[in-house]
Image 1 (cartoon, rainbow, N blue to C red):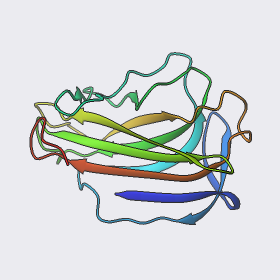
Image 2 (cartoon, rainbow, N blue to C red):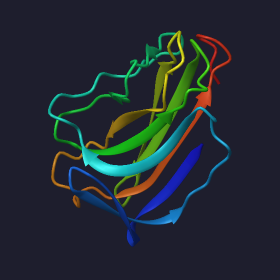
Image 3 (cartoon, rainbow, N blue to C red):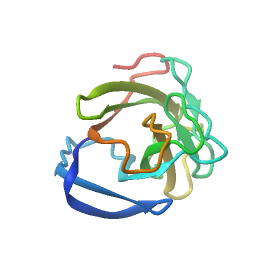
Length: 168
């Protein structure tokens, strides 16, 4: 699934994390995505005081999803920084012991500085008994209050790998 938002003036999103509302305009583009791993929300928030554990950063060394919904981060993060928070649902149809890649690209500022970060996760050896929700945090690098960082684009792409260590 690919999501592309141009943030600035326009549509006010109702979804909030840590009482931070986003203002956005742009387009949502879906190319099907993974049927068992779907993005259900993209919101602004902040990196929690206890920084979530990182996803794997190298193909072939994914972090296995917890047996209960939990939080992860892609890339480095500092508690309190402004973050893009991706909410994902994993369904009971998730394949077993399968590596998948989440690629996030964020452009920040009037003259956009673009950052692409990739994280690797792996499904468990047993399927979840019900749909689980996972939060994935991406630190925008802004240490100040929301409104001081201008995100020009946010793109998220999730791809299933053909095997552990064999990703697109």
